[in-house]
Image (cartoon, one colour):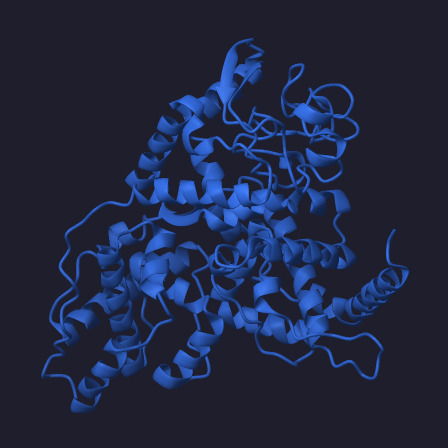
Length: 523
């Protein structure tokens, strides 16, 4: 039986959140993330390899909804009976990967982010704190993360104008856990990316499925598989013998006051284990990470002493991006080292005019480095031609899986209705979390072992196709009429039944597919 008083208290909270939303919604809708040309949504698409801007716009809508909920917690209680608590960063960052991607990018448009936070809090806060989400998802007790994740889902449902079915399909804990613990920012088509794909291919071919095989469905199996994949991916980081950063030798032609500031910037204290986490997120060696970080400090120094606009290389810019996401630490750094409340970062808008402008500023920045330090580190400062053709993107583990021949073989066979026997790692339940037609238990081996996605499209491609294993040939996204499997195929045990593999939430909270071992499937 439920707790009537608890439900009444929760409903009172939800009603008050709706009241607060009504109080600020006009200003929220008036706020623009860009100049009206959807360049912010386009940036989300580019960084996450999305081809449909409607997906990015849906992510933004969910992000705005959740931020309204956080702002509500910051509103004074005004004598109300509802007890509010100070937002806890370790709880409110327990969100789907997709929403966190919007939040992370928004912070990089720092002036706009500050303006937005002022709008939603009615001027009570200039910013809402943030750190790289990995440090919450990977180093907080997984049961606590799941609890906060489910609570955050309830909050968003109260505020958003999107259908609840969309929210449920995105808020699948298993998917979010893997994406938030296994995501990386890499150059598009990098050798490291291709090496990871080949290593995963090798794992698939091992008897028992290698790291993809799990024997249980409890929540700790998520950690087990994530950690195993983490080790596999780390082995793909290039082993390099690079010279450490040089001591700063600032030219004697530079004014003494400016030379004296050099030591302050060289010894900037970044957040704890910054180099390790930066290297991990970008899959580079610690040696290379330290070089990029040192050049970032030089970029900051040059910006400070010249008081001129500078343009970093992509390598240095990635360090800047990572530093700024430690928002409170970055604010302290800005005040102590840069002499400003916040040393703002605002990405280019991608126009031809911006490209021409920043190419010129980039060349000027390199000239400044040469003038101050007498040399340019080629590892971190490539030519303008290279710098402005580079494209860093975020990849989570499904992106690697989709490149394997096993995945593409199944995809092709399903599209061509070719009946063959294939094997895939049994139901590691990861991947639910794309918008509408792309929702469903997608990617990463999917429900009961098929992996092509519980609902790739509005009307078909269920999570299995076949009798006994997988989740039926399905309608409406995640299989069957009553969930993934429903009554037509898979049943209660092999496909998780109505509640576990799909139900109304497309993926459920505990299992997405049956059997944890490699299973054979006729498709």
